[in-house]
Image 1 (spheres, rainbow, N blue to C red):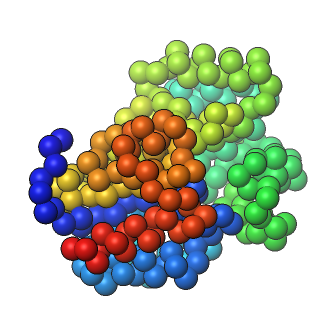
Image 2: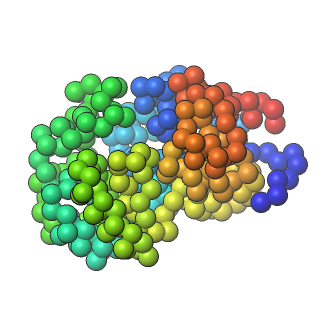
Length: 285
């Protein structure tokens, strides 16, 4: 898309971990002040994350009552600032049944609108969760239990299939099993896509789901042109978003693919590069 001159950015859409959030994967006064300034200056702010953003996560990040739009699960679900769902995209039921049956030993997190459904026990889930490099250094035991308040454990395949599942997460360390699941997803690439933020992680959604498409849908709902949108990201699940919009920015800590997709690289997320950059745009215009 050719960039128009002197276009005012009206919508800011930010990934969370590695982008907007600090090194503790939390918000702070600097971040929240930038969000508030966006709203105060009659612009729109949206989170665009792979997280499910169930109620417990929204509370922890301090985003309630701030007029923020929330794009969840890589774009499978969008909430307006009042918490109303304005877009939903569910996984194909036949695919869900097949993947659960084909891989009975994988600890899938089957994520719905309000809850996450798992076949394993809570203790097993905590052990698996603590292995994840993105969390193990920053979350205390009390944080982990709070983070998992939305989870329902020891669910049968039949019980999971009764729910509306929008996204499947899992972490597969076994090389052979990882290969098999990858091949299974590729065999069903006409209906699903895997867009993980890290290579060893799987984040499976409907094929049409990605952050770029979701941000574009939101912009359309708000009657905002795509060149009036600024997007920020750092990982593999941000590529479509970063490559779609002309005002696209990757953090210094981003993957090479994200930097290439964005074409613009700002500072490190640990140094509040994103909130600072957002404020620069607002004050310049």
